[in-house]
Amino acid sequence: MKKIEIKEVIDRELRQIELKDDIKNNIRNGVTALRPDRIWKNIAASAAAFAAVIILGGTTVFAGYYMLNRVWVNEEVLPELDSMQIVQMNEPGTAPDEYGMIYEDYADYAAMQEALGLEMLDTRLSDDNPYMLCRLKTDAKDFAIITVDNYITGDTGNYQYMKEENRYAYDNGKEYYTPVSLTADLVLSESQLDNGWDTDYLGMYRFAENYTSEQGYKVNIIEDTIEEELEDYVSEKAAVFVAGGIRYTLKGRVSIDTMKNIVDTMR
Image 1: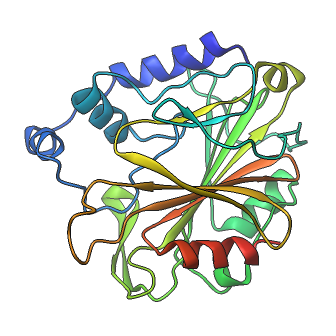
Image 2: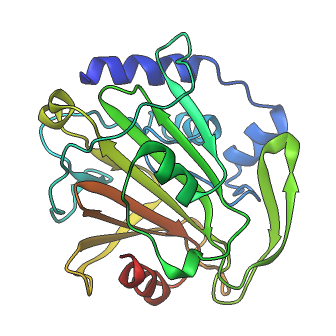
Image 3: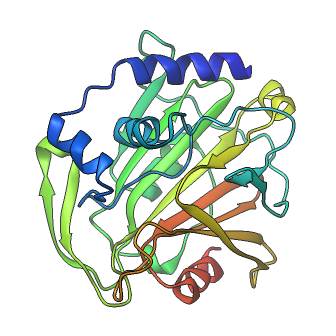
């Protein structure tokens, strides 16, 4: 997929954004949403996340798909990760929308892998978890993005499904202030691989560190800086790495040590 095609899809989504006045005011005043799914990544960002960046920074999170599969934080290129590769995936059963995009929901991570014929990393920490919300976004030709909300629940609890918003409310834990989500970026074609797939984190983020996991994955850790001055504030961490040609992002409000331990369980 050429970068202009991806950008056109994003631009169309942005034009459809409508936010209520109270949400706009919260964004302007720096209030973080109660829903723990502020998306960091460009193409996977929700409409609200796109709008927040537009209001606060006057730009979008879109970084472009070009040259290399780099990760940026506010114009800083992070250490290089392992190479993304073309992944074979079964075609979803859902028909594409008017823009050629396919959105498909799955009961859980395992069901999604079986339906799409994928073998992806998983962790024992996600076993027996009934609260996952798993979704695929793809053009079934060049790229696919898999998101799993509540992938690891840790010591969070009291989950209650909110049907109208298609999300779970929950109680914060001590080790896991929020559950940890999973995003996976899959390259499906030679043209997408040639174009590359850069990801840009703009605004109130910083690069925390780079390290090599127990399995040998090169990992970049990014964290937010929104309310770091608060005594009990737990910053949101994102661990980004590539394994088997797929780029994974684990995200949640946990300590860096906890995030590293999670990465080390991904097999």
